[in-house]
Length: 196
Image (cartoon, rainbow, N blue to C red; front, side, top):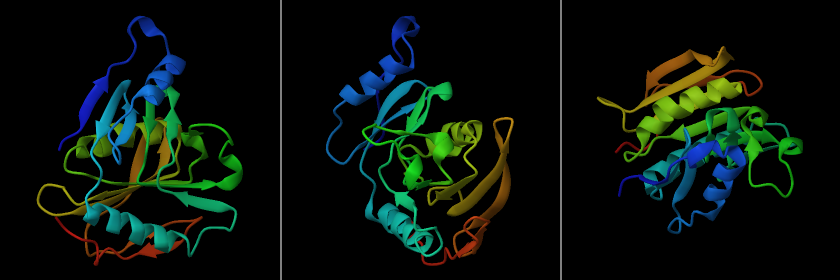
């Protein structure tokens, strides 16, 4: 199954609130991810087990290094109104105090780290749109785990956002360790990541 475009940005420029309302009313099939990417509401199929195994392995390691008052979320909605985006990253690390109670999303600027594991159906969103969105929002670190990269599975760590762009901190293949800098100071082994 591939990703499906459900609804375009509202005509006439009704704005962010109307776009979010449409997103809230979009009832995707159970397990599917409903996001707003560059003003377009999309529905992506549930991830395959290999995808979930990678996300779980990263999450398990993150819990060994984050402060007690930070959390690692798998289904937290991250808002980027300036980019007409509302993403659902595979993992996002946010200080607990920055998660607004009673809301449907957190501002992207609250995230300390975002992790996306590409799916074959919509990898371009993680590689291009979300890369630009997270950088524009000033998310300090973006870890892109790409089992579907052409040639061989890759892992990229982006950081030091400036003027809406990231600097590449690490570019490698599965099997290489990647160091997440402070505040994590974590060496993430990728050798055991499943490959498609």
